[in-house]
Length: 318
Image (cartoon, rainbow, N blue to C red; front, top):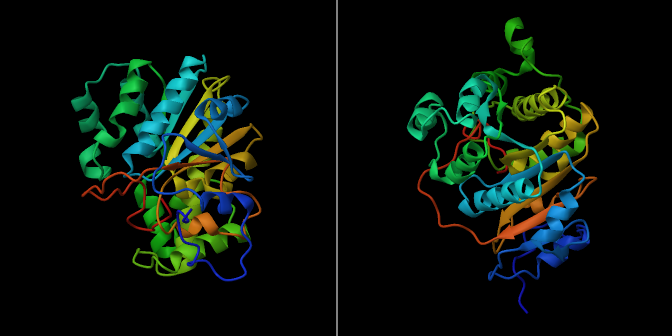
């Protein structure tokens, strides 16, 4: 049987964990449940995946923003958690903390879709077709689930990307979350991406890296604050964000764990490719890519390029 993808882009003599070799046997004819449990890479059905998630208070499900199949899988996970009686809060990268009052109105069912899109300024701030997220947001409204906006204002991350934390006005520095810039594995990972994506506004890698960490730290802080509040008590939080914020636990998961030790698990959704993204082969991380890797058939290309968060300013793996 021919390999499903090429390893030729990887450096010679690089050690790859067992699951990488198992992914290599996956061909282009992807089934609906091509789920691998890492680090071994054993194939598991959806029912087993859900059972494995049972002990976790926080479940991260990554995505490539313009892959509709990824959003269908996220909806499937959400509906199954609800069917099993979990009290679920959906936390979304695409929304900012300041938009929480609008999100609460949506959850309460008091806004029409048109009113919601206008108030949230979808067309001018999201840059992606609403249909990608419509079914998830409809499910949230139907079940009156809380949706949590994770992000911080774009202008703050933009300033950091352009000038660095050290040059921010004192007023802006006071708005920053607690930051950890010392993870050498994460730094290497981001640098490997930065070297092929230097069209952003960050003038140097250090500013670029600070902006990436700020983005993740802010979302981790929002999650931590909610989970430690009376409103978050006993809730299961389903976090939907770009894969780059979740892979290897580098982004939100590790930074959330630093703020508290609640159990979490991670699922990375990746569309099948003949040659996979570099993050799949990053061999210097001390932990696997995720707890689960779900491989999907790629969706048809979409003409409108996603630009959630600061992707258009300081690109990060999606």
